[in-house]
Structure formats: C-alpha cells, structure tokens
Length: 397
Image (cartoon, rainbow, N blue to C red; front, side, top):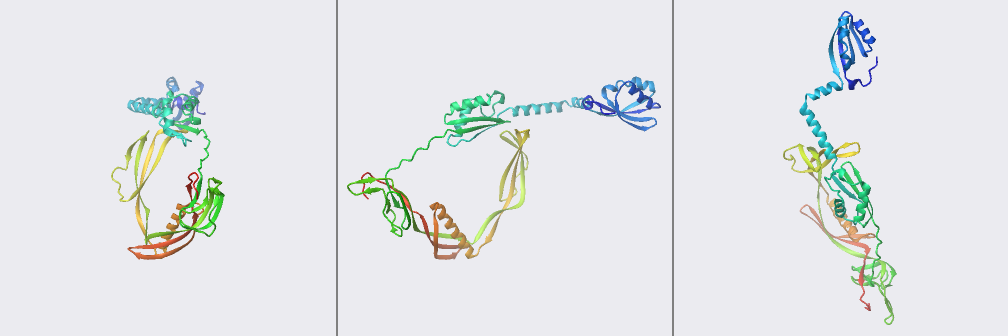
C-alpha cells in the first residue's frame, strides 16, 4: 500500500507483531480500513509494518481477538519531534529568542548609500533623509513609502532633478540625478601669448591675434609669441590671443639609479583571523595572539548571510595576513642607467602634457658610486611653450 497523505505530519509508527495468527491480524486491519504499508514478513509468526500514529490506539481489540502481541520499533514524524523538543525548554527558548532577534535586526535600516551625486554633497542628501525619518537603525515599518520619500527629498534638494529611494533588505540606496546646469562661458580678457621657456620655435598656429615669431626662431623666456594687439598706434584693437605654439626646450636632469632593485613578494605563509559581524560591530572568534610575521600585508573578506536576495546584518569577516619578504635583484650598470633614464623620460611626458615629444637625449656626465649610478642627462624636448599674459588697457607691445 502507498504512504497515506501527510504521513510525516500525522506521525508514523513501525510495529513488530508476533503471534500464531499474524495473517489473521493483517486481514482484520484491512477489514477495519486501517491503512498499513511496508508489511515485511519476518517468519511464520512475525511481521513488521508501518501505520499512522492515530491508528495505533485502534489495535488493542484486534490484537486481543487474534492473540497477537505488538512492539513499537520506530517512531517518526512531527508529533514525536514536537514531544522531544517540548522536553528541551531552554533550547526552544533560545531558538525562539534567536529568530526574534534575527527578525528584529532584519527590520532595521543598517546602511544608507547615496549614488549618482557629483556636485551635491552626500552629507546634504543624508541630512535631508534624516529630516524625513530615514537614518541608520530606524525601523523599516516606520518609513514612508518609497514614492513619498522620493518626492519629499526632491522638495528638500532642488539641486536634484530626480531622486529615487530603493530598499533591499536592511540597506537603502538613494539614487540622485543632479539637475544639469548650463556651463558658463569662460570670460577672457585681452592677452598676449608668451614663451614659458627658452626655446626654438618648431610650430606656430595663430587662431586669433598677430604672430610675432616664425618657425626656427630662437626665443627667450617671456618673449611675445602671438600678440593680442592689432592695428597701428592710432587704430589699435586688443583681442584674446589664441593659438598653438611648440618649441624645442632643453631639460637637464640629475639622475641617481640604484644597482639593486628591491621588491616585496608573498612567502605563502598565512595567518587568518575570523570575526562574527553584527551590524557595524565585529567580534573576533579565531586567530588570537600576535601576528607571527615581521613583514606582512592584510586583506579583508566580508561574507554576509543572505536570505533570498536580501543581505542580512549578520555574517563573517576574515582578515587574511600574508607574510611578505623583500627580494633583491642586482642590475648591471647598463640596466641601472636605462631604469634611471626611463624614469626621467616618464617624468617629462607627465609634466609637460599631451603632445610632448622627446627628440633626443645626451649623457653629459656619469659615475658609479656607493652601489648607484649617477648621471647628468640633457633632454631635447618638443613641447607646448605658450603662456598667457593679460593685457593692460591701451598697453602697447
């Protein structure tokens, strides 16, 4: 016979029945419509079977009628589990308190994150949210609906064109779309473009103003390249000089490059410290004592508990401390020189901006001393040499 419906919820009992008339007993069960299943004959006078707990109390007259005796072998199902738990009152109380605490903690707002803000400070958004009752450790059921919070925050923050509030578990995200402000046109006063270094002109393009120098002209620092004054002495007009001027400039670098390169690597030895995280607090569970490494780096891994798609305010945090050691690599003199010169070239390109080209380099002096290579290097660089010089009204060149 198949298992009756909800047998685990109603409780099942495995019986051992012994006697001269075991078959007659089983036939009587069928006549009285008492469901049994998994009937296993163990001999001519012995059989085992399963039946529902409520039907056990109906067996006594049938056993008396057939002269059989029964013995309960196994009890399964919810009624027996509930009875066992009822004897463990402290366990039940602790379990109930745990679920109550978990429910209460998951009903709080633990974290508020502001996204999308660029010019609008996050502190201003959080202050406006607090005025509307949205702040950490606030009960979720005391919050207004997300639509109402969005409208209220938009009224308090006119700098935003739209504000959305989204709640996921114990976290709230405030998404801000800032109102676009027209970029004010820059106000330029009349000016010259002058040279910011001694150079030889390699390229000059005057978009506005009067070019004063030409290609291959040698200029001193401060010399006018594109004049902002147009016309003669009687009819003058002052404009904003615009253009692009490039020139060859010489930069002298004092370089010292060590012949031993040091780097930090992991040894493979690890010391872990495990924490139980409750909200914004962490309780250390494992890995007490001092760190056994003289040199080390630490990484943190946070693993919160999840319920469906919600992140609960409970979880684990692991601090992984990895031992490090310093490795030394000896360089040849040529390798050390290359490292030093490459660093100087990178500094030039970063300092003088887009379009800068290093045309040539020349080592003026070099020596090796105290494990380092010392050099004086002259770089020939093509770079933008234009610099603004405001014009005083009616000032001549």
